[in-house]
Image (cartoon, rainbow, N blue to C red; front, side, top):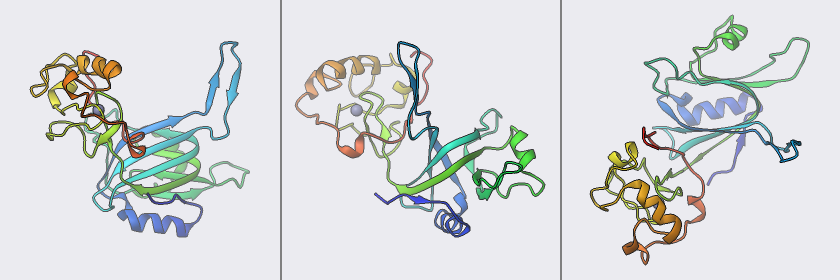
Length: 236
Ligand SMILES: [Zn+2]
């Protein structure tokens, strides 16, 4: 796995744009916000050292793996998924270092999915709900090969979205089936059980079905984290 690279200068930006082809035709497939804060049962509030990090995963036709970006100390972001035609596909990203506060020299990283920020534009951009954009104190990125989450055991064992590619999960032996993702009670044609039952079995037997108990294995280190890709079901 590659080391993280930070975006601290115009040169870093040029390197990022060159390697990712300006993120042309990349697709945002996953996004995790880690607040770094928590509260206990005494209503006491705690804040961790790495707070407000936003992790975003993209597939890309240009890189040998996914583009993984972590926006550290994210200040503001907008994922504009509310339009009917929105596809999460990026035609060309823009990334720049900006001073966004009046009377302050603090620099922020401004990333947008929509090409060059409008010339007259940062204030307009920040008010505008149409663009997908992220503003943070720092950004790090790397190219990495991430697996997709198994809908049964929850480990990241599939090299592609698990929807009918005729693959088995090595950790629980779930056989991927698109219909089961949309309906937890739909019976998997190859396994003869539903995803709901397979999950129950895995919790007790570490396999989606009794007959596979001798074939499963523990998850590998690279299967503990990946892309939380799943089709929402109406019957969860
Ligand atoms: Zn599995």
